[in-house]
Amino acid sequence: MVLEDYRQRLDLFFDPLTRLFIRVDPDIISTSSFIFAIIAGILLAVSGHWIPDGRWDWALVLSFFFVGLNSIADTLDGRVARMAGTSSKVGDFLDHTFDRLSDIVILIGIALSPYCDTTFGLISVIAVLLSSYMGTQAQAVGAGRNYTGIMGRADRMVLMMFVLPIQFVLLAFWDRSGFDPGLGRELVPLEILMGLMLIGGVVTTFSRGINTFRSLKEKEVEENESNNRRKHWRPLDRRRP
Image (cartoon, rainbow, N blue to C red; front, side, top):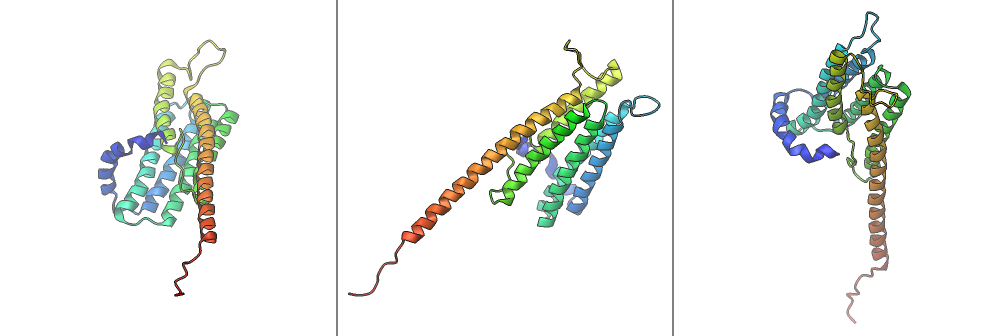
């Protein structure tokens, strides 16, 4: 994950915020993050020409707000649990489950919007889910949770928070959904975003898969060597002659 390098800087912002929510149940925060994601996904899907009386471009501004709330809540739940000493496997399960569901509803919202080809968008969603699956599958087989790769969830959220305002500005001030580079087709920011998600998801999937495979092979070799040493080991004969 690219943003892992900035974790310490983020702590300066999130630690005081975490203390404000220290008495809130982390599971409630996790659930809230998913609710924010649902609202953001709906707003993204209905933005543009889906409104009978004309385009509702302001839905993009509202979706930006709820995507931000989803990201903050997703960051806070684990931090609150650790700071309050209430971390649990149930909470970790809910956190990861709601993360995947949030990815689905937000990205499908973009795929269903008029700013992205639906088929292309849904393929991007699959790529994102595969990359997340490879991370959790690594943990399931004993290699530890794998956060490697160029496109983690935090990276996706930051990209989205950057692209949504650009899409809105184009619509609100230029009355157009994208740029025309002279290729016969407009380059729409949200569709470009889904393209980045697709590429990043595929690269991250292979990166995590290779990383996990190597880790498991190393553990397998170490275990085989350890077993061989035990087979050839003989206890010292301490009996007197």
